[in-house]
Length: 424
Ligand code: GDP
Ligand code: IMO
Ligand code: MG
Image (cartoon, rainbow, N blue to C red):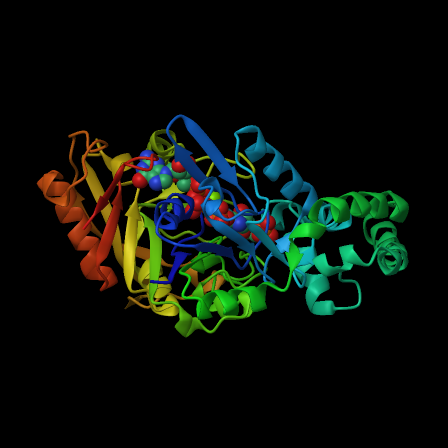
């Protein structure tokens, strides 16, 4: 079975945990979109890993890890991540493959991201400041792009960086009155990255196609979530890649039909970091309670996540967009103790009821939620491994959501650890 794991909300659904679990039965784990804006958490025993660029299969020493062409790679972050894992006894020799066509995030991208956000002030997008948008913009613009393969041609890279940095400095000075950056410094860093990563850089498309011929099983790890998709999310409050399942083929050079099962991951409630419309948001005691209980603070930036009720309209849209076969519903344990639970089953926009999601941010911000209220439960569910053992009210909650999504909920998360999971 080849799986693809996709976030169905605005990111942070618990993809890392699901990928880590599925990786046990797969040969290869592939990241194919986004960059170090992602923060995927894997908890193994007492160890907690926060992965930004390495696939979440990394913590299993037998997993082959691929960072494919659709990812924007911040080499400084990747060096740090590999070093953190090395200290825990996890190494990557002969099992990490980075696409020569993946674009490189450099210091000027991060600087541009930060300058642009502070320039926007109250209108900012609330990015992760990881240089994602500026790097993808350079990819699409072509003339000022650096790819991982360029690290193997240092002479050419030196000239290219000089030209790019001259151009960027003109923009920094004219638009933002900001200090210039040094091309020499960036080049010296790239020389270090070249030493570090040359053994890993390869044609990952060829590698993956060969793996298919050899009957290897592949797990594709989505980053972010469908509602943050550049084309299908709540634009402009999105990320700069196709973070829905639709990003997979272009992001790694494999046809979508290579995937046997698209597994969508959603939380039993909703969270969002950064700006943008969020119809079910509970900016009140309920939201605060969920944040506290669920530990809802960004894995990448530490920002408090905005919290709200489960939005079946938005999640069903993501299920359709992604051709999702089944759903993992995470953090059911976080809802324990709430007397009543609400699920949004329709929107009312400008006086009209609809169950079809709108990705138009202005329209979505006018959406009033039509809620169904369900009863909560008090029993501790964090040690359960069977669906039948869940309190009846928790089972009702799951089956109610399932009916609205029209796809089976095959996995239920009842805690952050590997074994805190129910397969149905
Ligand atoms: P990702 O970006 O989709 O991989 O998700 P994050 O790692 O950013 O955020 C999910 C958080 O929830 C992490 O801290 C996980 O350890 C934690 N987590 C995952 N599944 C569950 C669950 O079922 N219950 C609880 N309580 N925590 C979970
Ligand atoms: P994972 O993979 C949650 C959000 C940012 C911001 C918007 C644009 O851990 O689910 P960017 O830095 O990408 O230009 O920011 O997208 N965002 C995420 N939110 N989880 C993520 O990744 C995210 N990656 C980006 O908060 O609103
Ligand atoms: Mg995350």
